Image (cartoon, rainbow, N blue to C red; front, side, top):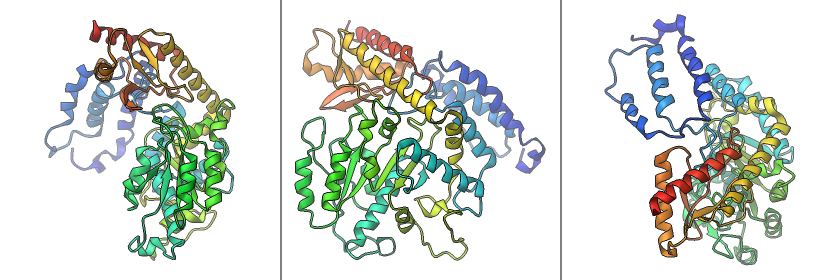
Length: 475
């Protein structure tokens, strides 16, 4: 096989290979290990020299599906608790297939009115879902990190304008460092965004009143008073080890008092707004200047998906638009060119899986899912507290339980090493997936059950497997 044109009459056949594999694969997820290292040798079948004569589309895709359904890490299943990773709802997965099928060039209205209109609709629906003001502007991004880039680029443009500089055209040369202040709950993605923007990841100043990272409002207030000009505050809604959050209303008050820009990292914590039980954590987010979140976390849409919202819709076009390329068309409020509002020029129609899942399940369906995950995480916390060899290290606030293995007779100075070994053993075992992190100087587990398939029985399995493997290590 040489030229893909030779397959134009059977172009749908490779898709049928995937479709036939999908139903049995998805049905197997509740029972199969999250990762089976015995299948890792199959990965060698991906390798080899680039063929001169190809296998043809059907044979190539059959090979990929055969390897993938056996050797992949099955993070779409109900027991992947490592990092903070959602799955893909049935509607979102199908919507993503549709995005690939239609293959829209989603950056310009001219190239795809479908993609542009879908993005406009889902951004409005997401604002309604999270309780953000309807006047906010927004853009879809590949991730929360790129959503931070979008929001903080708008902040950087605003800050530089306060110094009389159009940073989009003139750059940062000659300007002082942009003051960015946050709590100890800050995520590394915020630092990475500042690094990308040329502001420097280590210029970020943290103000924490304890070793858990909770914000020191008085110290931040004093620093803002002494900043000598405009500054940026980053509020963190949902910390990755415990689900803890900054007091957004109080930080909004500080921003208002000092004329600062308030940026909210709501990667997964923004979904707290969906439930009356946790909505208080998101209070004040409507006062922010920029807000970011991930779709491939609690929204349960496929990778890659993020969103960035800004109070002033024009701030994104000031940061990313006005390229001055004659061949690029102008836009208006109806015909939006989203590649002028974010860091990407070439963009896929990532609005389609979001549209499909929100249309399929609506506000009520997502509230029910979020509340089920709150119940599952609380159940996990209760199991940990009831187990004699486990120690809960922070209250369960959202969808994360932070704990460690602490069997009787093991001295404190050996617990970090023991928990690190247990984390390695858990990932090697593969029945459930939950790695380790560091919290308050301790090596801990912090599983995050937010896959739409996950139920209480899945976290019960996690506790059982952890205690089983722990007993082997200490026996």
